[in-house]
Length: 292
DNA sequence: TGGGCAGAGCACATCTCTGA
DNA sequence: TCAGAGATGTGCTCTGCCCA
Image 1 (cartoon, rainbow, N blue to C red):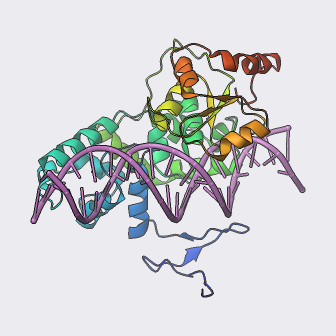
Image 2: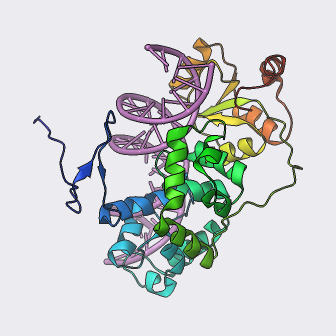
Image 3: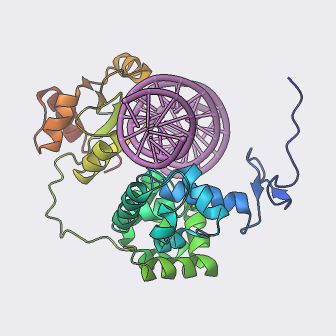
């Protein structure tokens, strides 16, 4: 072991790092920093964001090093014949990747907002913003006060979103995304979507067999549920798949109902599992969940 | 056909922010 | 000030694809 001294300059580009008061993290302030570009691309293509199947960090780095990817919009302008000719690739891989990139153009708005890598904006915040504004254009035109008026978003988050929207390079990037065919607005359903899980807060743990966790989370959110990552007194139920870990113990400790994957499938089928009924009644009697 | 490798999927720890 | 929740980073196992 050796004492570690935090660097004063970015190890990648040499730009002096910035540290906000009372914040542990330090940031490179160079918007053109090569390491930042790579991490922005990794985040954009990742599962919680645009979920481009088959493109991971290593492959993205190769494209970046070749100069083929230089911002998130350029992902949609890759030359697939050239990709197929790369060592370790091939026609099958390139075709699968091209299909995944094309598919990602129609991801829901919240995934795009999340993928843009705005500081403090993760899945939940991106969902809140997408629900409120419905399009990137509306978000770019919103004031910091309008953003901060969203329940669950405070001044710091609103400032981060507003600052992003005001920076000219970011506005140009949004235009480029539109130009390459990325959907930047959600199609409003007109309120006909069944939201039978409105007011219910769920946590998923363990491995699911019938679908992936992200799929399950997205479908539960569409049904109105609030899906969180940690068990608390506010959790309506924990859904435990195979090999579930310590969250089951926490749920039992807090007397939170523990459901099985079969119960999840019942919920996704538009019905309410028996095991969840007492908790749902309690939510209704309490006047709905705080987040609803 | 099988080895090697990249990526998917997941748990968990830690840090930070929000809101009461 | 503190509890709850989300963001972020890391590490592990498993799966599927490429290519020799």
